[in-house]
Length: 80
Image (cartoon, rainbow, N blue to C red; front, side):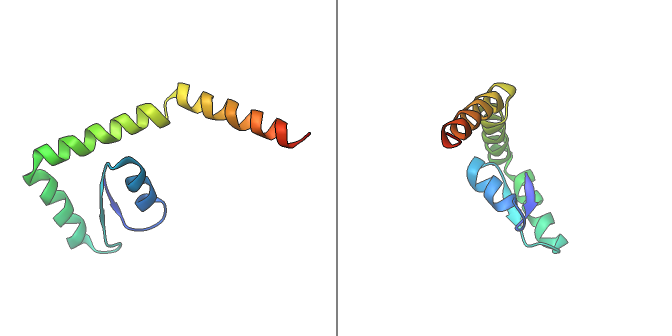
């Protein structure tokens, strides 16, 4: 994942370890990040693997269901 260094992208990449950031509105910086990944397929593969692991761990249906149940239980405890 090559994303601009703005909005939620820095947090997403920090949380997953699965990407590279570039200066927003700088197509040259974006191209440099893509070029670096194309020249280092092992790095690109590792970033992809970490991204997939993060999605499966944190954003699968099962993970989302666990998070929903935990938040619902917490809301019920605090509403008493």
